[in-house]
Image (cartoon, rainbow, N blue to C red; front, side, top):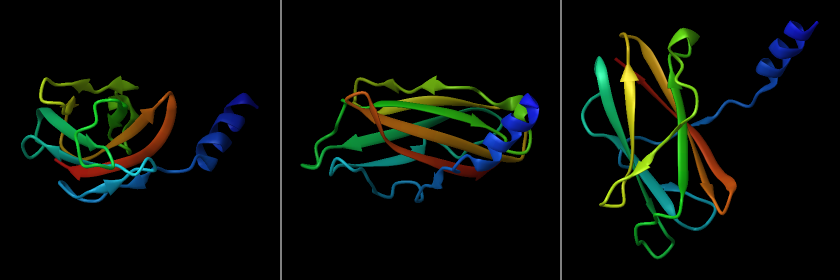
Length: 127
């Protein structure tokens, strides 16, 4: 019975919204926005995902806490679990994404401010 309850919860889970393309502004409820991009086209090995967050005045915002999970939606064996982005000296949020094999991959990001999740979205890409 517990297994069925887990399956039902997974089926009822709201999928994360797909994010706009690399470099496009994505609005945040705080009035600010963020952009995302990979340092290089993702391929086997490590791909660096970079997020830049901005306040509503257009200045870089380092007050966010950003985390993500990544993996292959069709093969759960490669799921990362929750991983935190690191803030660089330039004020960019960086996440190394370990790509273990070719196929369809997804990174689901979560942005928090003042302890509350204000945004969640998914980046889908092929390797």
